[in-house]
Length: 127
Image 1 (cartoon, rainbow, N blue to C red):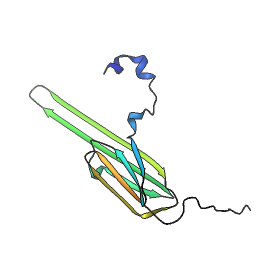
Image 2 (cartoon, one colour):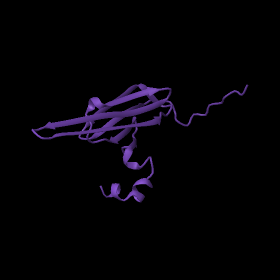
Image 3 (tube, rainbow, N blue to C red):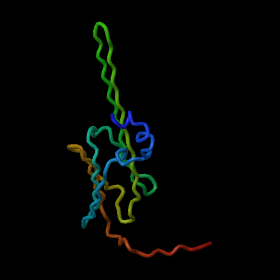
Image 4 (cartoon, rainbow, N blue to C red):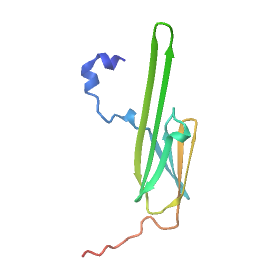
């Protein structure tokens, strides 16, 4: 709340501050890559994990509303939260074998590797 009253600090904060995006750990194992997304406060049905044209996108939306009405007042509170993170998939990932699970504020996405070497050289013909 102190930031709100100190307008100079409030308006000089970067638009895309780190607290808007969840932290992600990427682990490179022998047979898979694992992404650990720190996203407390969500439910597993809030997440959407998609693959499109070699990009893995992890997004989530949540919304809460509370209303309390008494004789002489009404109190309404609401909050919305969302994020989206995208990652380029390496060529050695099997897109059909990606699994995700959410427990205790941590979304874990497992990307199974194939036997395709990651350092394979490809030549592209220039027309």
